[in-house]
Amino acid sequence: MFDQPILHHEPTPITDKENPLESMMRRFDIAAEILGLEKGLYEYLKTPAKQVIVSIPIQMDDGRIEIFEGYRVIHNDILGPSKGGIRYAPDVTLDEVKALAAWMTWKCAIMNIPFGGAKGAVRCDVNTLTKVELEKITRRYTSNLLDVFGPDRDIPAPDMNTNEQVMAWIMDTYSMHMRRTETAVVTGKPLILGGSLGRREATGRGCMIVTLGALEKKGIKAKGATIAVQGFGNVGSTTAQLLAEQGCTIVGISDVTGAYYNKKGIDIAKALAWASTHRTLDGFTGGDKITQEELLELECDVLVPAAKEEQITAANAPRIRAKIICEGANGPTDASADPILQEKGILVIPDILANAGGVTVSYFEWAQDRAGYFWTLDRVNRRLERLMRASFDAVYQSAEKYSVSLRIGAYILAIDKVAKTLKVRGIYA
Image 1 (cartoon, one colour):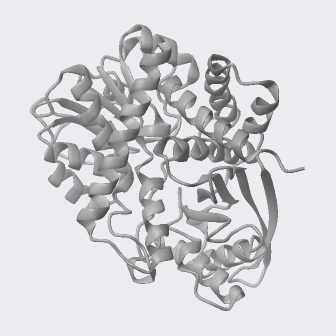
Image 2 (image 1 turned 90 degrees about the vertical axis):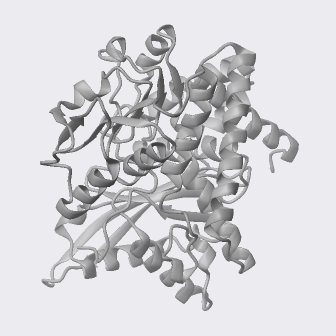
């Protein structure tokens, strides 16, 4: 369907459709209670600022008309223009989009970047669409949201089943209606259209940076530290590759076709080459085949769940043997598993910190587009590292101050920042 592979810039689908919003709110409620958030502020911060549902009529290649449904949720724009990806999936729901939009608000606040949170989606199966049909859907979705999108209002990015080409169509459609080229209306674009160096690898690089920080806190040397990575898409494979470059030993990897274990270490370069050639890890000979469940329960220093949601639950949390969990995916740990992992002394780097590298470099891309001046890859990576390390330290200090997990520490930090900003701005009436 695409000329280039789908890139999961802001990782992964949610499988339990009734859970994401509830799971986010359970953590939110704990942090709000610790902060003593007054009722009015609580209601304001949990409620999306805007929810838009659009109808997308398309003439298919065979001449018939089909109607698709699209969503855009602006959770909060107190800190600045809202920011968040657009995913295409046949089973996406409004509740899912609302949860993802809220997570984006907290990510941006934690990373100290001037964005609020948003998320978008279209209910469609990209595997059944031609490129022409996909372009029509994208352009009609964009034109329906012209009053929502904008470089100073709401800035989309790639997500599940969308990529650089989809962002190019959005940018072009918006620009044609505005009668001027507006490169800053989306991020995750092709480099030739104002994209940023380092954007594609940003989420995995961010995971690597905070993992190194967590290893340091645990007194574990990076060289020789054992890592298991669930998921070998853009985020998982990049994280594995970068941690291997830091001297870590990647003992386990997996994708949808299965998991592989090698006590002496998997050659990530060979695994990447295999996945590139065969499109999956199926048949990979660099490790022993194991189950996904066994990979999650491997004895290792760091487990990186970078595949999909609800992978660590109350059922398997007692069997997790990693010392550190770095959540590359959104929502890989069920709220019910949190107290079990904390009791076991496992340091969990929460998703709203761990995978925030993507939105951070999206911010860099937006800033470069606005200035019309583009940075070197080294500058992008150095600035990403500085922000990720500062945010990791801030979350760690928040957790220590309130004697809570890093996850609740992160929520406290984010909610407190947005709440204080709201108080200073006041509520227009």
